[in-house]
Length: 365
Image (cartoon, rainbow, N blue to C red; front, side):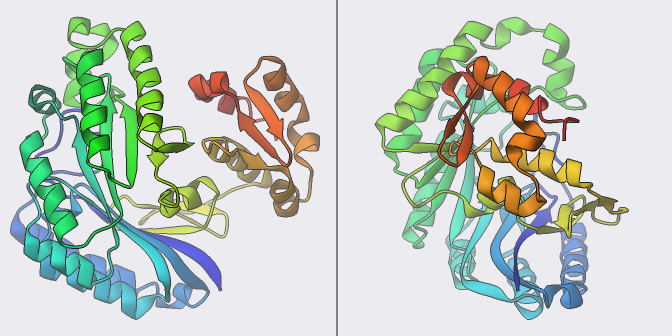
């Protein structure tokens, strides 16, 4: 049986954040109930496909999955358990937002097998949280975090964001240290991207209201501070934006970067099965060998350990040097890639301009 990652999408939230371009939004209790029933039917519809797989990881994302009632989450997990063979040691993650969980919900999450929580903090500064359009304060986050610990969760991720409106280098450092001192097992640290179609794009896109945002030099310092401070607290960087205590790397994300097959269930969820990529309800796109090799490179290079030349050759029947030798040598000469034994990986400078490096592997396979 082949390993499979399951992604379950819950597209609901209390209020959409101003920077968010995910498929999510507010909905009535009735609409949420209808969606859950439809989602359970969809999960069960994969009974035949499920026979070929063992589920290695599950990730329930959104939106805000924790907006659902405890019984609704129970039904979703019952449908997965009836349909798929889930490994006993599977990593089972769920995103939650402060202010949307109760002790009852957390106890139910534990009872149905959720063993990893990802909590969206973003900032420990209430002014910055308000500017982002978050529905919670830092104090409400802290209450949710401690409730999760009391419920027995021993694998928690905290999301943090930098380069956000009104943030200074000092307030960014305070958020990093405040989060790290709580000793979560994992911290995801992202820089704000102003996406088209969001309220933030209307306000800040194309250089508007630039005075509200940190300038490029400050953003760069925040980026350097993040690496230094989290390392100081014992977090190792295993992917461009992700830091973990030893042994707590997110297995679901690692599988994605290593092109493990995944099945996305729920509105707008994406899947990769048999080298065919498709959105729920959409037409599958067959990935050519060239596409697969390019994905192996630009997804795998997000990991600090890089990509394996041996695995590349075993997967695609050609050596990495034969397919990408010219690109790799060019990037090595520029100080952006290096080789360590079997692995090709980004240098520190390469990490800083990773999008440029990864673009070199598109259309060259």
